Length: 371
Image 1 (spheres, one colour):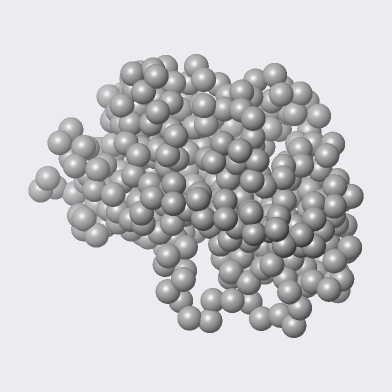
Image 2 (image 1 turned 180 degrees about the vertical axis):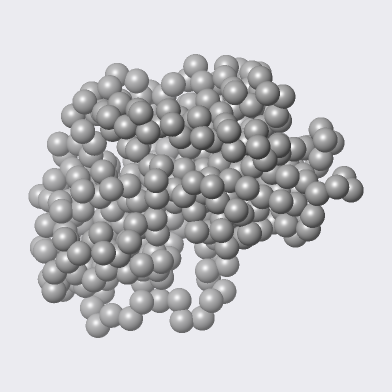
């Protein structure tokens, strides 16, 4: 391809921004003559992407929240389509964020724009019918979990599995010197999520539980998409907040309280014993219970297909239950060692490093042919 290649990239959350940025970094190493435009965050900006909508404006969590913000979401669709048409990309790269991205994929198919989709929606958990949308509208799907190709194969959909990108991110981090947080006490890490709704529901509960561990220093990982000032209402003399240092925190922690999501896998990859928390609005939870088809909510348990870490969901997500679980991990060396052993099995299943590079190479090979 002699002329400049134009690619529009869309993601709507902090984890997607991270994985999209790593993918873009690798694509720029393959081909210098690429112009990236998109929706994303600060990490994508650092890789040279011109951002037209920042992730801080995008994350809506749960059914109720989506309904309440429906007007904003519809305006976002209209704006995004307009920007894509104006940019005239050779193809789209859609990263996670399925509620939005699958609709964009459907529209792009009608417009004749090829779609590379990176990080599959969790169709094995719920909304299984989305697989037909993917089959119809997505040119190629690139997955990050080892069991996903098996699931897709049942529906005769060919996908590419290239390993999990977090392995690369953590490998890069481990090459940095002085990559631990200093503390005079062992550290209890709290990872409350990246969306305001989930933080407001769970962080007070997590902090209340942490008060029962006076021999630990409690440190909270702040989300990169939210300003530090947002966390002032949770501040106290007993709690430390860190910004853009989540991996340093996990590399230093003895135990952790973690919001369900990518953070559960990150915590496991750093081999930190954890308890997983999930709490949404009552309406969102009731709808989810009717629709979700999986035994577990944390990626650690899902990948290993067994309970490795305790999941405290909805009403069970309270300070008393968190305290009991953390104490059982901290006081029972056998339980702790079993969890760490299971983490090692998880790491083995995820495979080798180099996921972002492999996906970048496959996307470039596949989509440069199209154009």
